[in-house]
Length: 336
Ligand code: AHG
Ligand code: MN
Ligand code: MN
Image 1 (cartoon, rainbow, N blue to C red):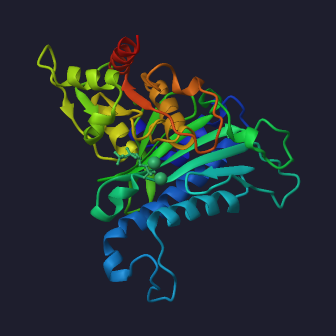
Image 2 (image 1 turned 60 degrees about the vertical axis):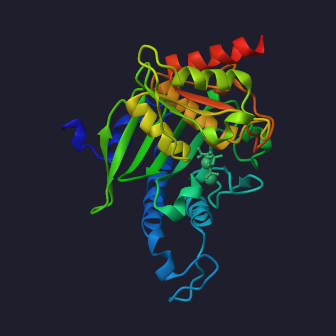
């Protein structure tokens, strides 16, 4: 079959045996995420009608309460994963604590936990700009059949078995890895099917795009300021182009296709940066490394970090290898 005609469903079945621990459970889990993605996509597409259908906090014509899209996305993902009884625990950027799931079927002893950022780039919702969802999957470390504990969630990114994102953009795409490269699937909204449109995605080794909220420049560490000035200098293939959507998923997606670096450094206002290690940085780092790119906290690999808290924040530099290495070089030089 032509690779491009392959659906996500077919791809999941074909690749099931190549997973390290192949019991079909991970395939079912990715299928559940595929379903939740379609539901959230439908809601995101309606966002512009909110003034007609009613704003958050209102009651709509069917008597249902209207909800904010980030709350709704959170509920849809959690509900889908719970209903299908395929995970033993979920942690979400939108929830204070992790959720432990006890399967009704005692024979069924789920091994996987999921971490999600249900709606990434939420400040873009009301203005019709791309948003996304990020997910990260691990095997639990505590015994199967017992309630999950915090230890199951505080694993280094290197332990991830799968990670991905959905970008609700000009078209909706689901991009994921199970540790064997990165593949992208585009939704055909007319029939609700994802097709393999971007097989084996790779970051170009270097690029010409830098993505950072430059409004924070004055608060950045010296090394980051120096690197930004380097990006703007006229020399060789520089100055680079600045592109910042304010949705990590969308900025990452563009940079992976075109070549570039995304940065959310620490600043004098936010000492650990803004992005969350578990819900945002680790999954994006796994994708980046699987696509020949790099992800760093400015000093070393993101996925080597041992998390200490569920909602831990960390500085983030991610994208084309040579660009991330250059940023690290400037940071190291300024710290000498
Ligand atoms: P979220 O909507 O899940 O809170 O994440 C937003 C994140 C990230 O997606 C984006 O790149 C960044 O925050 C934007 O932050 P600034 O507005 O501070 O640039
Ligand atoms: Mn986010
Ligand atoms: Mn979010």
